[in-house]
Length: 481
View 1 (cartoon, rainbow, N blue to C red):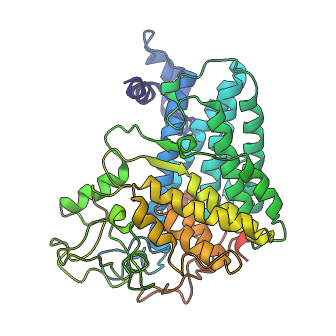
View 2 (cartoon, helix red, strand yellow):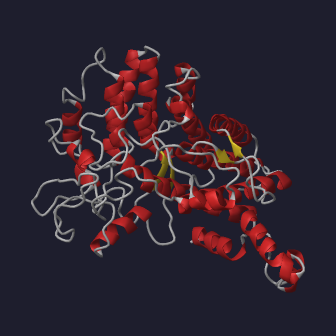
View 3 (spheres, rainbow, N blue to C red):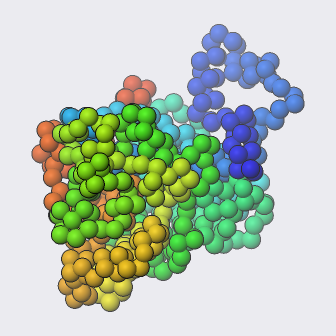
């Protein structure tokens, strides 16, 4: 119940810096200045300064929600999802305006900036550490979608035309923020963090530190195509990351339900959404590899034909969309049930990062152990019984042996354990979409896989002089060369 009280408090009290500035600008000419206008409407019985734990509640929950919001874009590019409509812009790599996602990311980063400022004023070490880690998570998603982005001049609410920082600098800043956050979390707490205000870890500082190291391992591993990559640095971060699934960063309290469950319910109401691509379905139903992945029943339900059928990206649905001819998210799924957790980072992802980095470091025993552990952890999380789990792990394709394990094996299996996670698109780009059976969408507007997003229309209209030019959506970000 405490969690909902914090959400209510945030709705009634918290004002984001950018929004305050916009109000001031709009009112200044006609009302003789923002502060005077706001003074007239001050309610002496209602506090205007949100509590630090109140801001934390909003920042932690919205970080989880932003992971889902970003994934709802990238799911189409990695072909977890396919549109039920033919030639849908998200399917065929058209230039799509994602102003809404941009705004939600920056709204949360503005709140996190406020949290950081208030934590500094109150000398709260743990709130400050959490703010830095949260900022790294949201900023990394932003720059991994768009590349260069406003940051150093963007969050204080004093600059209406902030400069775009270089993407490589933003990536380095994310790692720096994680390191700074870890240092703050290791200090003795100076202000109490209310467990109910922390939607990710319930004020467990050890788990915050492990999450920071897990995200750090992810970001360091993302550099695999650059001269900056250092497998041993990745493995060092892995060593301080998760050691149990109970430590994972996840949101489990929502104002209504898990947003993937809303997607699933939309289908039941004939608002078609969350349709699964033939790529992900064929990777699991036995068609592509000759064996059935038992996790498919935890991703979706069978069709009315008693089998699993996906939708080809760009083609659209083959049936009416109302009679279960194809697969989509349902409330029976592990990730799309009403009370399902919303993950920010997982133990199985970390094991796959370890497997990749260990292979690159020529530590085959460690790589093979981590590879198998990642698959097993994911199976166990989804509630797969031991017998089908072990039968899957015994398949020759899945279990090539320590000496024969390849990076392609790791990427193939990681594609499954990061289902509905934004990091899957980072991996697809790093591997040059080298997944067995992966096809460009039908009627694709690009001749190769999409590599980046176009800048949103809001930026192109409000900050036009600063927005970089995007020649094509095949332009590769700096780490994807």
